Image (cartoon, rainbow, N blue to C red):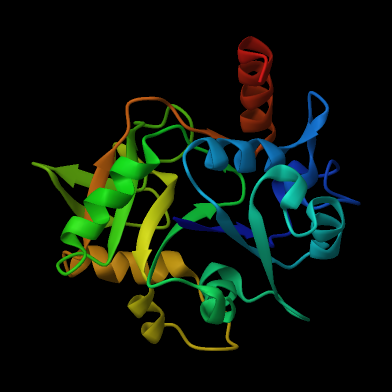
Length: 233
């Protein structure tokens, strides 16, 4: 199983912590957040990670290198110059990607059965281009952005709407073929494509019961830190 981690953003919401380092390197109980992600992935059978790096990405590579000392192979795909958004960054990484791969937001920590989720996607990949992990959120942890009803994803929006009670937990399995719909070298958000795919009934759900964690906000960072202290990971 191959995983792509989006780790190239500016992390404005958690400044000043990210004035001099990328969000992935924020230290939590003595380890950078990305190390917690990588350890979780390795424990779930992942062997290869592609990091979509941008803002201060060299600092990430200086710390993690090729991944040998962490037990995984790490490849880097860099945005040079202006940042291209989640879709633009993913398009740049296309040469590194398997035909089917996990995509994880760089600030998400999601506990689930990775092999089960991947297997579900493989089983149904002719009919669905994305398998999306969703969590019943209803504004508890962040703004909900998914309408899920009677076993199907009915709508996906980048911005929350009142009727939305489920949230994109920050991890999905994707068919590489969807990148044909993403322009090369232009700013593009992959969430915009997900909205279209949901309307086309091309996204299948993978419900998770354990709450996800994120460090994209100071509140989320505080909650994840408390989780790490409790679990002593």
